Each structure stands twice: as structure tokens, then as C-alpha cells.
View 1: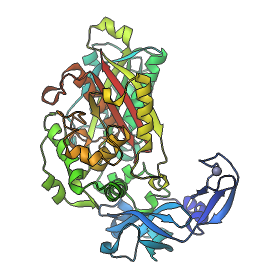
View 2: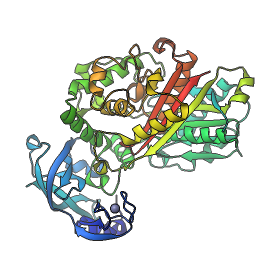
View 3: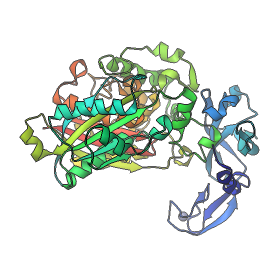
View 4: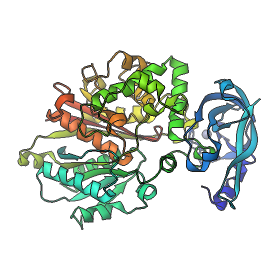
Length: 130
Length: 384
Ligand SMILES: [Zn+2]
């Protein structure tokens, strides 16, 4: 379970979908990094991720970690965005029988989980059919 | 570097050991290894353990276990690399003895998992994934391997039945191993009818939750020769890393760290993969064993499912994989697994594996993996 400080410091990535593009080789790092794993340059520019992409693989989680028990079963997939960046997230607003690889999806902001009775609510990106 | 031998092994029955604490499970197993080696002291100790902090709320294991084993004040350290912790502890012990720093080194692996309920265990294991960009979205380890399985099935035509055959084969072997958690056979139908955990993977595609430990004693070969014990040498050691976030891999069906760690270990041993007689690999899920035999170079990319179906990995096949029953049937106390693989290979190379003996085995290989392949450790062993 993330602490409020940990959650707060990730807001640029999670809310604004900020990534770092290597100024030397063009590699897009999401989340942003300090050194490029490809060419080891340390010069990045902040860019915004593409908001649509396609499903590379998916599964339906039926035995969840304890903080997701209320949501199960739910679909999770790896999506390759149109700028080539791959990321993992839940696929929602899509009946399980309509899930398939190659499915076009777009990013939306949703509640990810809730902490306890008086705890904070965590938000982030999820994928919905485009 | 000095040549290094394994002079003693220890392993007890694995399972849900509710009546035993972590320290008791470890000490019983370590004493068995010390007795097998016939030595009266240790110079150092390495313990592979993924997460005693989350599983039983205990850190600082090196000192705790050295004390309860009656060995303080020897140096003792815990080694962590998720499910590859045991294999990595073996590598650290190997480096220690090879360097000339210490002579008698115990390498142990331990995990006490059944004090938690299933959802808590799922969370604890999930910490081996990228918590901020994978775990945050509710993925689990069965879920991560399910993503690999679906991609492998769609890319290469691997079938649901071929996945099931990995579990069936490993249970066939585990039925011959009295220390296995589940020493009985299962059928393809049973796998296909077991409950879904993360589509397309089902309960019987997954290794179980296990309490258990394993231990080996290392010594320089020239010291081992004076003990009049059967000697199994460690002739190669390889370790490699990869991104732990599955989404960051170029191809999620390919385990690059397995390939790299095997390549390094084989080069050090001066052997080819075809030279090896018996394999213990990290079948945490059925799809994992298929991807591993591809990354080791035993079969071409994409042909792992067909190899299993053709019986190539059976005990009597051309490259026997997991004669112990593997993680699937023997059990998977995560930190202990990499050391238990070495225990099995030593038994095979000594000719002491009973009904699951691979006939005439002289060279063996272990492959132990962390997460979805974010780390991999390979060792190569030779009968003296
Ligand atoms: Zn770059």
C-alpha cells in the first residue's frame, strides 16, 4: 500500500502521463529515468505519452492481492501505446468475452484502490476500448 | 580461483509445516547437511530467503540462524533476489570458497509461507514485481505468467494441453520423491478442470505455497578429497538480470536473463548445453518451464510446448527436466528452491536419486529465477 508521500511524488507520471524522451537516441522512458538504458545519455526531455494503443496480452485476475479483493475478477493487460511505450494496467468497461490481443484501447483516469475505511483513494490510468 | 565441491546436502519433507517455526525448519535441514558432510565446524554461511519480513515478520536472518545452528560468531549473511535467492546464495558461497576466503561454507535456503492466508501470500510474492508500475494495478504473479502464456500461445501455437503436460510430467516425477509436498500423479484433465487463477492459467499450473528449507556444504576440492566423501564439483556459475517490469521487455515470451546466465555458466564450465545429462529448472508456473527450456537452448524458440508433448523432458527422455518433481510437485518455499535444486542434482550425480535416478548422469544444471525472469542464476555440476 503506497504512503501518501509515495503516492504524491508519482503524480506527474500517474496523472499527467509524463515520460522522458532521450535526447540522444529517442528512447521513451515511462516512468521517467535519470539515465537511458539504451545509450546511457542523461539528457531527457519531458513529453506526454500517447493516449491510445493496442493490447499485447491480457489476463483476468481471479485470486487478487488483499487490497484488490473487492474488485475481483478484473482484467489486466500490457498495452503498447502508439508511441511504442508499453505499460501495464487494468482493462475496464469491456466484457471479458470481448477481450482480445490487438484490441484498440485508450487511457482514462479511474480509481485504482481505496485504503481502509478512512484512508485515501488512489487514482491512476486504466484502459477502456477505444 | 580454487575448485569447489559440494560435500554434503540436506533436505527434509516439505509441505504445510504448521508445527515448526522458521528457525526449527532451517536448523533441522542444516544439521542434516553438516552430518552428510561429516564436518565439525563451519567457516561462513549464506542464507537464501526472499521475504521472511513479510512472511513471518523476521529480518536479520543470518545472525539468528547462525546462532540457532550453534555456529556464532561465524560470518553469516542473508541473500535476496526474490525466488532466485537460494541460487544466488549458492553463487555467493561458491565465490567465497573459490576465492580462498573460507573453506567450509554452508549455503541454505528457507521460506516459511503458510503463516499467512492466500491473499497475503499473493501480496508478499507480488513485491518481487515492479510495485509502482505493476503491483499498483492489481497484477499478481500468476497474472504475470498468464500474460506470458497467452502471448506464447498466440505467437507460437503452444496449446493449453501442452501447458498441462508440464505439470503432469513434474507430478509423475514428484510421485517418486518422498520429500515432495505433493508426491502423487495428476492428469491433463485434472489440470484443465482446476479453477482459473489468472486466465489461461489454472490452480494446477501454479507451484504451491510451501514451508521448507534446503542446505548444501561447500569446500575446496583439495580439502574435500581428504574427507573420503563422494565429490560433486561446481564447474560453472552464471547470474544475470533483466527489467523486473514485464511490460519493459522487448518480447515477453523470451527470458533473456535465463539465456545470459546459462551462457556464462556454460562458458565457465567449458561445456555445451547438449553435454548436460540432467536439469532442475524454475517451473514456478507451467509456462515458465516451456520458456526456460527455450532460453537454455535445449529447443528452438517457440518449440518448448512441442518438446514437452513429445516426452523429451521426461526422466527417460533425451534431456530430463525436473526429476525431483520441480517446484510444481516438490513445492516452492521461494528462498529454498534454488538450493533444493542443487541438492537434487548432487543426489543425481552421486547416483542416490532412487526411483527417479537419471541413468548414468555425470553433468547436471540448475536454473533458478526471480520474478518473471528479472534475475536468473545457473550452476553446472560435475560428478568427480
Ligand atoms: Zn538513449
